[in-house]
Picture (cartoon, rainbow, N blue to C red):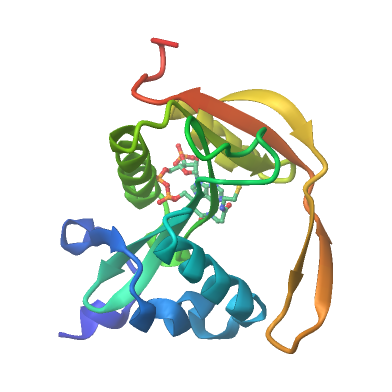
Length: 182
Ligand SMILES: CC(C)(COP(=O)(O)OP(=O)(O)OC[C@H]1O[C@@H](n2cnc3c(N)ncnc32)[C@H](O)[C@@H]1OP(=O)(O)O)[C@@H](O)C(=O)NCCC(=O)NCCS
């Protein structure tokens, strides 16, 4: 069937949401677009093995088409405190699969898992240049509580330290609530 390799429409019933496995790490690079995060992905995976993060992926016919990661412990308790607050990040769905509810399914899965672990608040950053993402998070029940300069550093796949600045709205949600109830 040729349709399984094409990024066009309405096959979301075949999409499975599951935890990332070690064998998936290369696929997170999305054919080169995210190769610079290779070391970050591996470090995040090791954190997951230690119970400090979760990495959720959406898979269809063996291909990863979306993801959201969850940081449960952070040095900054505005993001995550290891017990009540957790930070969702690296949220993306492949372009041909956007707008079909996959992002919402990924968020629902991440939030349900956090509730099971006893977490009460989910936090996410919406880029200031990304009002559509902010609209989605508001629809899911998130509300802005802080401005975030979004400054962070990582070591890229060639071992160079990269400093990034991605100004964002920090948004939070009481887990288990739906829009209109909070
Ligand atoms: C944001 C994103 C993960 C949502 O996943 P999705 O599967 O498209 O989401 P859903 O289908 O569940 O919800 C659709 C809503 O997502 C938002 N959305 C859709 N495409 C988007 C895009 N390219 N960029 C940002 N938000 C988008 C819109 O609010 C949309 O609602 P609308 O159709 O009424 O405008 C996905 O669109 C994406 O990967 N966007 C590019 C990367 C990105 O912006 N990530 C978020 C960083 S803050």
